[in-house]
Amino acid sequence: MRTCLIAVIGVTLMAQTAGGLRWTPPAGWKSEGTAPMRAATYKIPPAAGDQVGAECVVYFFGVGQGGSVQANIDRWNGQLTQADGKPAAANIRKRTVHGLPVTTIDVTGAYTGMGGPGAPAATARGGYRLLGAIIENPGGNVFLKFTGPAKTIAANERNFELLLDSFQK
View 1: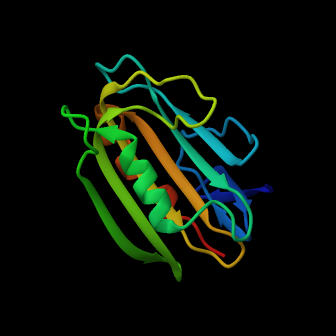
View 2 (view 1 turned 90 degrees about the vertical axis):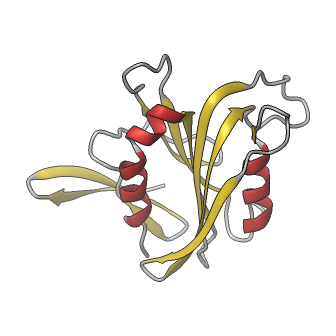
């Protein structure tokens, strides 16, 4: 990942890059840095009344890596369940951002997290929301996953859209 400065109306923001794409996080969203498979991690403080904040992660795995768009949408949807344990109903949309195909998901329910082989069993956290986006890119798809209490996500939904809309070649 590379970082560069961008001046916007007298405010300096840090543009970040992965897979030949660059983006600018919303004002007030500070990157916690990179980690394996994570091009950026943003921690968002809780909205009034929530006990915990949210996390927005930008994942980049490389060209041809990370699985298909549909496989990721299905996996993310399966991470939030209804009271009966079935996957929560998700709103899936397709759009274009700066010439890049983007598939988004918006789903609310009890969040169980990623899980997987060797991972400890997750305790479902009720009242969570996940906003996700997969940006299709010849240099490798970029995946955005924004999770946290529904109220905190709702309070920051516009910031997530600003982040998503900032992606470009």
